Amino acid sequence: MPKGKRNAEAKVRRPLIRIERVFYEKASFKLRTDVLGAIEQYVLYITEMTGDEPTPDELVDRGMQRLFDSDRGFRQWLQQKASQNGKVARAEEVGDTAKRTSAAITSE
Image (cartoon, rainbow, N blue to C red):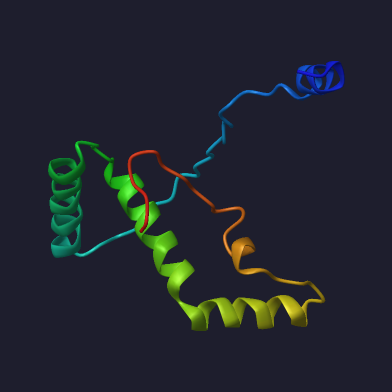
């Protein structure tokens, strides 16, 4: 291995993983009892199918984020609002302050 390459590798060494901090904010919502029951059942479904046991909070968080990400009308509306305010909006910025991630639940 050439000396220059070895020195370059020594300078660029970084961890193989990147830690992404997740910040949650507490909120309170009223949901219909059938929706609450479905959330509990979906947690059981994910646990049985994947072995991961998400919390109901994680399930609702990821489900809502998936809804926001897939709703083209909502993204378009957000972009229009941002352009009215003189900002450039990107789809990824839709929920920057509300962006949540979870190791247990991923949207596909």
